[in-house]
Length: 427
Image (cartoon, rainbow, N blue to C red):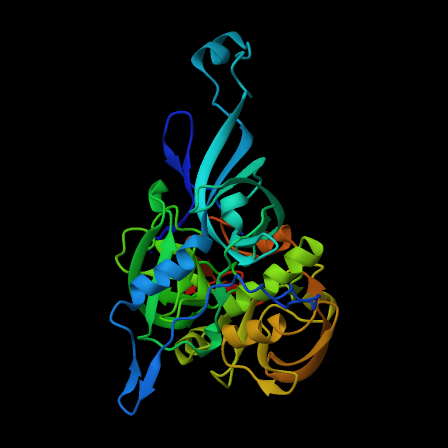
């Protein structure tokens, strides 16, 4: 199949002025909440209602931009990397290392962010500040401030940067859980270094899973929008018609028009709270690769010797990661997950939601079917590490490409089949 490559939003340039991007990477552990913004928070745009529906001011976008714009910032970052050049002809023939090999160079990038707390807390994308040696935050009023990365989370692509300044404008956070397709969406950011750029569209969809859009290593149900998002918009706010932040702009599909994605603020805020409190976010980890079981897949599997499924309802375990919580709890390749904690599950999304809503270190009870026999398993969830998620994924991980999962079947489960199944999820 054709691989769709994802473009995350940082706008990087090197000494050659070539544009490049940094590649980035759930249960939320309860932590003390971030203090509520002070009175400097921007007020919401008033919207009147009538029997005919909601009535917006004629220039509501202008009002949103004027009130929220000052709290949207530009983030310049720099990191030092080793220049890994290939072996030259001189080195190949004379076996002498080049003096230029292994030299350090500085990569610089630009992204966006927004001040969500008057104490100087800025929310942005993790890939904007990933491995940054220096971070500079530029405000709309002209102030240029040194930023300190308090923490970054590759699994949700959320990061928090701290700046020291007085009289900071602050955004008003909304409720992304109540979003409906068709609502207004306003994006503010710094695409391609063009500060304070405003684009407008609608909410195209909500609840897009990572696997549905080709980035299954993200613990996020994305907001989809057709508001234009371009390199440099990363970390900027997606706003509703009231001027409230409903999402953190993060990704588009390269070559597509009107397909942008944002992290819901209701997901980003708890992660930000953890990053402020502890510098890291904790995610529960089960340790399986899984796919939705469909009638078509069931029929294909049942053609294999010694492999029979009597149902097409459930989630099929493609692989159990060795030494993972799932393996320690007795899960096996080929298990069909029927329920978790006595709640039926039919999709990988439902399994992920249960795991994400359970604190790492707590147990879950799974009802599975294996070779036609039902059994109950108790699995204590672990804490997810970046290298664990990478090892869970088939093929080249963290390339953010839609991939196919080859599922060999029969004895030892999934060893000899030529069948390919899309949409493998890891959790």
